[in-house]
Image 1: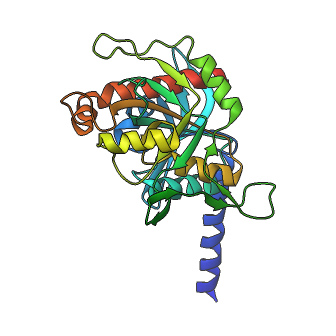
Image 2 (image 1 turned 30 degrees about the vertical axis):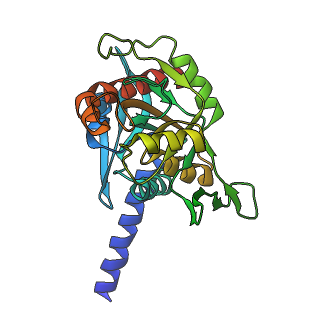
Length: 284
């Protein structure tokens, strides 16, 4: 009997702990990234209040300094891990545990459209999974992902999952006053709109880049964003993806994408994170 009472008491306090953890961050903005280094600048600005290790992910909660002052807005910062499955799992865990009011995903990407150069910020209005579909006699045919969206009773096929329109408008405003770090004496540009694509492969082939442009009219490619936007859409959570080109998918000139991402990783990640900090000012 005594042992049972101890067990019940322990479970009670565990439940209280998780309720408080969730309640203290309810309605806050979540910032996500895939590589640990993509979040270095954001973490350096975080006045840490709490952290929680859940299923291999560290959720950091605190107030963020977006400039000369510490803003009152509490944020949740988490590394999703690389790849579509990791991104989807972490996004759902984030929503279930913390119920954020908005999700912003930041990091690097590969350029698809030739107008996007290294260091440029690209913020697509919709995202598709480029390797989800059917292989037949005529090759690969992309297909829609079937989900049940909020307010719907039946599942429906969705090829392009959309980011939040209000956040996209805020992003346009944020880009007007931000000065990005130059790359090889060129000042990177900020582009909002268009399409992004994601899949579980690192694209370093010109033929694949051309295919993604022709088939999806894609601006950029990465390995997580479509999964994050899909999960956010299904849960009814506003989401935005901010990506900075670290390479041209397939490389440019004599350099491969693998070489470019090594050389320009830091400037691309810093530009993307700097844009997020500027965007947070708009959201205040």
